[in-house]
Image (cartoon, rainbow, N blue to C red; front, side, top):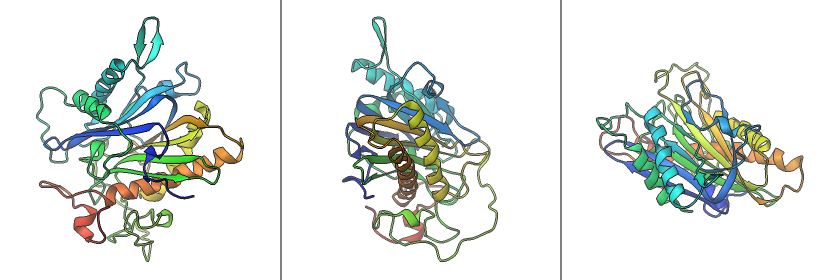
Length: 333
């Protein structure tokens, strides 16, 4: 496997991602959309999720495709971002046809960033406008690190952020990941600058430091409270998959989260993974291709998590150091 040309989820043809953030609020929204509706599924493993429209992604539900997926800060307030995304899609004539009306289908998930030092004294939710802004600027290229829904994200010890990565399989199928890292756990090993995801790094995409010289065995203590931590992600492929097959890809992708964040999937996190299949290429081998897609999704997600933390930028008022400010190793890509 090798990274795609951008090393972003948008290496999958037709996918676009947009970010919008408010520096004073220290929060934002990230939207993934496409040229046409796409198959989507979700798998939740964290104990404190916050979601919108995820029940309809089950394989037995009537709606088979969605128009966009959003990731947002703001805890439950961030679910309002879906309203802004729906408005943009409605104006574009997109949605599930119900008689003369088209209803855009926009699942989403949120992270908790209400205690990150930003100004949360607003009287009207800023998230519908942020959702619309993110949808309007969606493109193939987009910013990682302190951007979009990852703008105010934090981990146990370092600033979190928005990450993405991609890979092309020998079969020609492409897989990508997009993630907001706001975890209870750590992306780095102990007090070292080494990333847990180091064994899967491509080149020097998050510093090229390699694995840590030793692995700590002590049981960690939580540094956040119930509901304050979540890592939310989207994995995607250009393969033609059913909703059930897409669900299995989401399940497999959680392995990548566990490889890159220690600990993961705790009762205090709302960890979840959406999966997307655009249907651009047929599955040639019904056994090998889905097997490899799940494996690639896990690897891409692990790499995307490390990139999110590595690319986070320091800003005035930060409650945590960024990886770069703490370790000062390597350039920001």
